[in-house]
Each structure stands twice: as C-alpha cells, then as structure tokens.
Length: 234
Image 1 (spheres, rainbow, N blue to C red):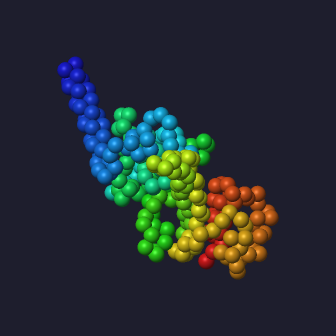
Image 2 (cartoon, helix red, strand yellow):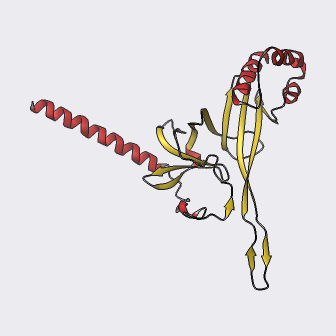
Image 3 (tube, rainbow, N blue to C red):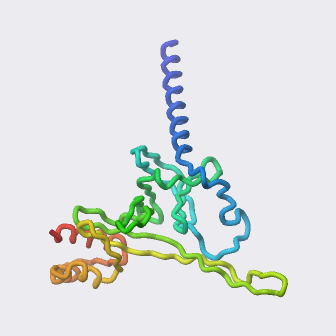
C-alpha cells in the first residue's frame, strides 16, 4: 500500500512539473516589447474606431509550433492582422508572442481550418509575416495573406483645438499568392490568373474546370485546383 501511494505521488509530482515547465516555456515566448496590451485599442468600453484590427474577433483554441520544434496545443489564440501579432492568454491577461519564435500556428473556426506559417513570400527583402497556407506541394503552392488598413477619421477645427468628427476605420485587405517552382506571384481568384500562370497548359486547365466542380473563391476549390496543377506542372 505504501509503495502504491509513493508511486502515485511520484506520478503526480512529475505531472505537475511537466505542466509548470510548459507554462514557463509559453511565458518564454512573450514579446517583452509588447506590454499593457489592454491599452492598445482603448481597453474596455466604447472604442474610437470602426471594424476590428483582428483577423477574427473571438478567441479561438489552436496550436503553436516554435522554430525550435516545441509545440503548444489547445491554447487560446487571437491573430491581429493589422500589425501581424499573435496573442495568447495568461489567465485573463492578453500577451503577445514574439513573432520570430513562431514557425506555424493553426486553429479551426466556423467549420474551416486555418493553417498559418511565418514566412517570407519573396526574396525582395520583405520581412517575414504570417500567411495562410492553402496548399503546399512540390512544385505549386498557394498562400493567402491577410492585413488591415486603418483609414483615419476626419477632424474639425473649432478655433481652439481639433475635434474628432468621424471614427477611424479598419479595412480588410486580402491577397492571394501562387508559388511556382520557387517563384512567387500575386494572383486573384479568377480562372484567367491560372491560365496566365501556365499558358502552355491552358487547354488542360480549361478542361479541368469544365469536368470538375471547382469554385476558386473557396478554399476547398483552390486546394483541388492546386493539387491538380502540382501534378500537371513539370
């Protein structure tokens, strides 16, 4: 009986140590330059802008993989596409994860899976950013980038000071990219973009569209098309 109690105690101790070590590793990801995040957008109460700086306003449950291979599963996440920040929560405090430490993160929302990768889309000196992976193949890959623009509201001058007349407004910006044999090009969802990407295969691609129910404005349609193109392209 004493042996059983001792064994249970050891197992419980190891479990607590594992949880504590994971918590410490999560805290190690905090960006020290981003503190007091509640003050970033005015905190609680009425906001002075229209729209949202976040990709999805709700907190979601997702996974994060670091560039050292460490994985954190089933943690609360919130992606801010305005400044390319990924938030998590420590108790009720929102904290920013250091971008350079993140390799990928993912979550499910509204019946769809979102896989993001921290990557540099081109070699033109652009900084790494989080882009959604639609499809990654040997020769063809499709990525989707989300960002926000902030339109400044108007002001009026009452003779003494400038008074805000209209609120600032966040505008969604979405871009689609195709990576063909290492070369990245911005594309749209229209079929013509794929004809232009593969002019020598235009007839085959047109036949594919005629014989398959593919909507390139939907994620599953892009995945189906990219899978076909990955086999088609040499």
